[in-house]
Structure formats: C-alpha cells, structure tokens
Length: 595
Ligand code: ASP
Image 1 (cartoon, rainbow, N blue to C red):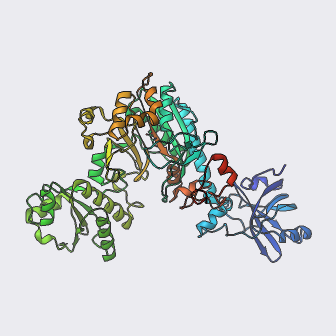
Image 2 (tube, rainbow, N blue to C red; image 1 turned 90 degrees about the horizontal axis):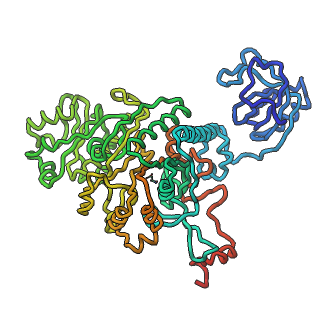
Image 3 (tube, rainbow, N blue to C red; image 1 turned 45 degrees about the vertical axis):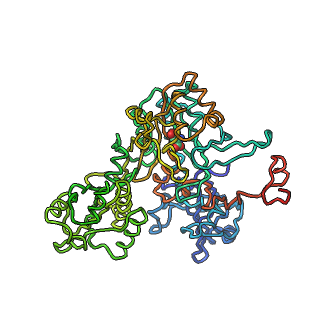
C-alpha cells in the first residue's frame, strides 16, 4: 500500500496516528537545518518536518529533495507548534513527523515554476502534464468531469439514451472544412471526421431511439480563435415527437442540474425568450448579453422630418436611426471615443455621432441641428440625464443594430458593467433563448443562399408559403440558440423529416439532384421509410465548462488542447509520417518529385 491517507485528510483528531502519504514535493524550506516539505497530491497539501535532532539520517536525505520529486513518507501525525498553525490550509493544524522517506522518483529542474502563473504559453503546452498539476487546471478538469456526469445523470433521468456514433464518417459539402482520413482498404476514398453527429442523430430518430444524447467529439478544420479548437466536445441531443418547448424544457433542466452539481448555483428557469429580430433590435446581437441594460432605442419617428442631413438621409433611404444611452459615461476619454468610432466604422458605419451630457449641457457638434421637439422626444426616449453619453447609428436596420450592438458590448467593458451593479435583479448567470432565426443567409462569396443553421432545419410552418414562393430572405427557421452572458452555448432546431421538403431545401441551397443522391441519398431514403417528426440541440461543452470555471479560454478546460496553429506542442502533432504509410494509402505529397 502506497498510502493510508491523501494529503488533504489529516486533522487534529488524527494526532498520534501512524500514516503513510505519497505525492509530489510541492515546496521545501530549510529553516536552520530543519527541513519543511509541503507534500502534495491531487487532494491537497500536508506539511512534513524533518528535524535533524530527531533523525539526522532522514534530515540529510530530505535535504536532497527538490520540487516535484515523487516521494512516500511514513510517519506520525503531530500538532504544529502553537502559533505556527496555518488557518488557510485544511491540514494546517498538523504536520507529519517522518520515520521513513522513500524517494520514488526524482524530478529534474522544472522548465517553469508551478506555483505562479507561467507566462510562456508554448512552454506550458509543451509540458502540459506539468501545467495540469497546477491547482487551477486540476480544478477545471474536475469541474468538467462533474459537468459531464451531471449531464449524463440528468438526461438519463429523463429517459435519454447515450449512443455513440462513428468518428470515421462521411464528408459533406455543407458547413466548415472537414478533416479527412484516407482509406487504405478503398484507395482514393476518404472518411471525414464528424463536424457534429447531425445526420447520425437524425437517423437514430428514424431508428426509433426517440430520445438520444451523446457527449460527442466534433472536428472542424477552421481557423482558430481563443474559444475554438479543431476538436471539441458537444452535448448532443435529439428527440422525436417533440416541439421546441420540449427541447427548451430539457435544456433548462439539464443546465440547472449542471450548475447546481458543479457550482451549487441555482439558475432561474424558464429562460427569457427573444426572437432573432427582437434580439437584434433591442441588443444589436443575436446573442445578447443582458447582465446590463443599455438597450437600443429606435428614434426613427423622432427624426423623420429632421433637418440633420445624416439622420434624414438614412431614413429617406429606408433605414433607421437608433441610439443607446451609456449611463454615467459622459467622462468618456478621447482615446475611448476614437476606439468606439473605429469599431463603428469597422462594422459599416460612416462615423460615430455621440452627445455627452455635462453641467446640464448637451455637448456634441450635432446638437445644433436638433429642434426643441426632437430634443424633448430624445430626452424621454433615451431617459437622458446628467452624466450620460448617447451614441447614434443612422443606417440600414441591420447595420445600425450591429454597430450599436458592438458599441454596447465595448462600452460595457469600458464601464466594467459585467462585474458590478446588475440592473433590476438581473442574475450573474443570464440565460436566454433566441428563436426564429432566418432559415437562409445570402453568401456574397458563394453567390448563393446558405443555411443559417444547417440544411436539415425546418422552415417555420407559417413561413412555408414564403419558402414555396422562394422568398428566401424572409423565411424564418424553427431554430433556436441558448445564450449565457452573451455567449452562444448551444443551438438547435426542429428538423425536416419529409423527403420532398428536404429535397426542396437542398435545391434552394444549390445542391443538384445528383449531388443530393451522392451526398445525402441515405438520409433521403430513410425519410421515405417512416421518419417521425424530430428536433434537437447541441451545446458547446467546452465553452460551457469554460464559463463554469470562470476561464477566458476553452484551452484552460481541455486536458490537451492544440495551440493557435492547431498543433499539439507536447507530442509535436501533426507530424510527418513514414513514406511507407503514405504508399499504403496511395498518397503522394505534392512536394514529392514524382508528382
Ligand atoms: N448539429 C448542430 C450543430 O452542431 C446542432 C443541432 O442542430 O442539433 O450546430
């Protein structure tokens, strides 16, 4: 037996007990020949004291210990000397007086210290196993485990069955770029790693599973950002004979269970719901952060007859004038104003007009263009008070919403609205649903309509006539996202389950009949063999855990993430392979001479 206790379990009541502990040497301190060691395992720390006067031989041996040596200590639990207790440590009342020290394995000098936040990310990733010894990351892995367990327990309690679906699957043209796996047995053909188990889970509905879930690995060959990784994990759910309300109910129950189990947080359910149009109109975003107010207000009526050309011009061209009031932001600095103007321009505005309210005066070059009636209306619509700063956007509806939505988020950061003063009881964990997304979005790059969610999403029943009339810009989808604190954590939809409708959808996306058969023939065939109405949702599990852990990046909640060049620095992957492996696969690299 390596140990009788873990390093977080001994207390005053254990004084006098013979124990064996094992773990890593966290810190050693030499106080005039007396060696103090904090022994660490995954549960915590226990102090071991080697006093030369008690055992000179042992103290000599302890003298050779270095950080991260792996040791086993046999000894007796003793009270710490009065005044030397450590109230910040669970085991801070006791220490171990050792009778034997076994050095199980020595550690070389470390590439970075483990007791402070290492700055060099590459170094951390190269030695990820050391990085993971740090308490913050160790805690994150445990929270992740508990979140996965809470998910499984909750969905199991609701009758959902976890089914694994293939990792070697089929490439389809819709969506992100696929990771491909060449087939050796069928030369010249490729598997694709799944971007999500979307088709499989729908086929499981055809198979009569009715309630499916999976904590599923997904792969997308995309350019990386802070919260993206080439492989990531989803909580994937699908159910038959359901309405969106059923999916909302399961989701809310599951998220409540996850938050309760992992962090003992009671979240408020049901979540508020906004249509896509309303979310954009009021918050300038399809994933609104409602931990603070600063809503977008439509001022078009007020300025309909305005003599201010910029506003009038936008309105006459069919656009809108909208504004936000940043309460107490009249002290905006020139640097901040410049940054906000840049953001506005980046998102399509020609410039940025704003008014500061200081000493009872509205300060802005545009105010002189406003009539008294306009000022009065503006004041009441935006609730303008001393100390406020009001920003305007006059543009096409979409652009105006987008610009003010971006400003709203950046101003909230500048004012630190996330961390303090919640408006009227808004919770720290602000969940909401966004529904009724557009079914299609126009891709200027591809010069065609793409599915906003994916090609299997149903048009809303009341918009079917628009769909049939090919008024694609107006068709709404039976699709929904769940948003937490301005981050989209999940999304899903009711699905098309009728073969003719699915074919029409593919057609709208510019997929020819031949391509439909080649790529989706199996699904279209299945839809002719008794497919129930069904729908589902999927959650970015990494992002969810990131938020639960209060981390800024999903890398901090993954054991072995890739860096921003999609590389695993620890194992040096991706790597070159043996030419024989390539020959077996019938593959020649374009750098090869013979090509
Ligand atoms: N499979 C979809 C996705 O990964 C989610 C869903 O529609 O259930 O985005």
